[in-house]
Amino acid sequence: MNCVYLVPLLPLLGFLINGLLALGQKVDSQEKNIRKNLISWIGCGSVGLSFLTSIVILFELLALPEGERVVQKIAFTWILSGNFHIDIGFLVDPLSAVMIAVVSGVGFFIHVYSTGYMAHDRGYARYFSYLNLFTFFMLTLVLSNNFLLLYLGWEGVGLCSYLLIGFWYERKSAADAGKKAFIVNRIGDFGFALGVMLIFWTFGTLNYAEVFESAPDVLALGGGLVTAITLLLFMGATGKSAQIPLYVWLPDAMEGPT
Picture 1 (tube, rainbow, N blue to C red):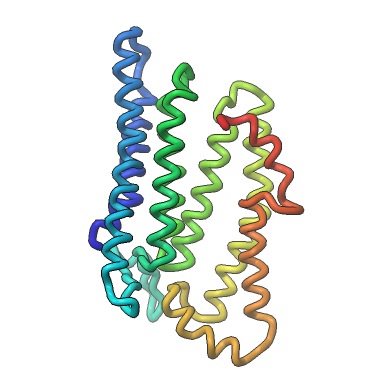
Picture 2 (tube, rainbow, N blue to C red):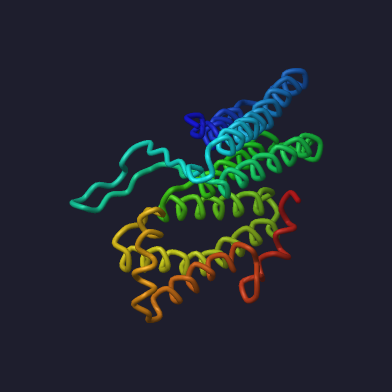
């Protein structure tokens, strides 16, 4: 289970390497083909290895007794102030284990398909760096052990959506579509951020385990706090999934590589 850190870090490494390759100077056709093959292997390979790692983690988790299938891995303490602390870490349970396998598995096939779909595009390396970064943020979102890290992954996914929708930014329509998606999603994300703040105000923590442990006591008090938190988080999901009324960015998203 210690290899859980590799699941998001491998796509992040792919993003960094392909990002550097995207900054490279123009080369002749032979070197260009070599570079393109290298970019493909790095982009697809990093996500493919992440998928294999997630499968190993899933089977390791299923091998544990049913009552022990929740594993929390803390990397470091990010914020420490008095009794308040935010730990950067990952929570592996049956749901997150299945989801990282789905995200990395589907992401791998998208990467493989893209090697042909984007084969003749000038921004080949840039595209794969964006796609690797998208996968990293999605996996971080799924594995996070607290609402703050979840929010950072959430915003990262929004950033990558903007970058991919506006990928062909030389075209005004694509640039406008990217900005439209970014702005509309910020509306939903504002609600999501308020929901996270309200969680901290209500529970005094953002850690999943501590929030869920205190939840029965808060529910017993009644009132509209839990309803407000739920609706605010749902507002964020509405924007990301392009539901009414925050759906207006979706048709224009076709301006990007689809």
